Image (cartoon, rainbow, N blue to C red; front, side, top):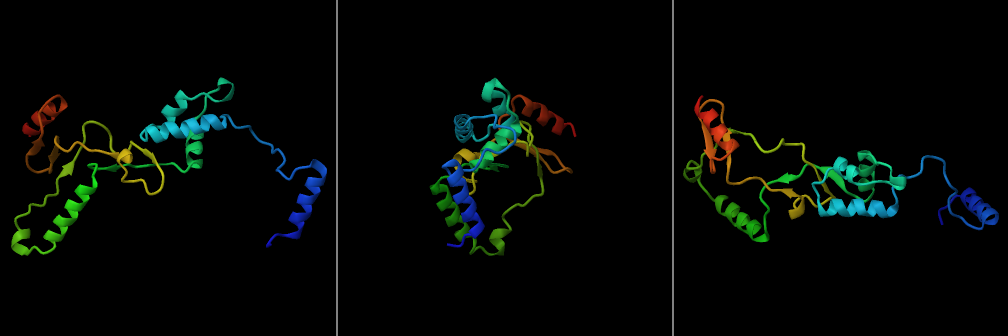
Length: 188
């Protein structure tokens, strides 16, 4: 065994004095949550991957009914292997979608210049009315980026884009805020 002799001596001495080799109690502040509460935190975040740590800390009370901080929630989730990451934003794809995309890519790999000239490329900027990009986080483990419960599906059928020099392009049904946006773009 590749163990230092001093370590063996100290373990034998501790076993002789205390009848156990477990670590002695350490100084420091005691944990504010129980192991059961820690498991509940992890389960809640596994069920709702987009739940924020601050919202979870407001819902959970620690020992002696004391409030816990959002940093405590983050530490407990980190211990279980969950990390707050930016979610993959896109359509939720099935295996059939992936197969169809592969077939399409193989088909387009053989295109010539004339076929590629029929495709329109643009440098339009996208903007979102519903929420701020980058503020939403998903709690996930390594390798779970494209799982359906970790993907934030974007609105595929409505929205607006603006290229800065010409008119505003609008798709979808003009209702609510979209109507105001369309009118503002048309007044340019």
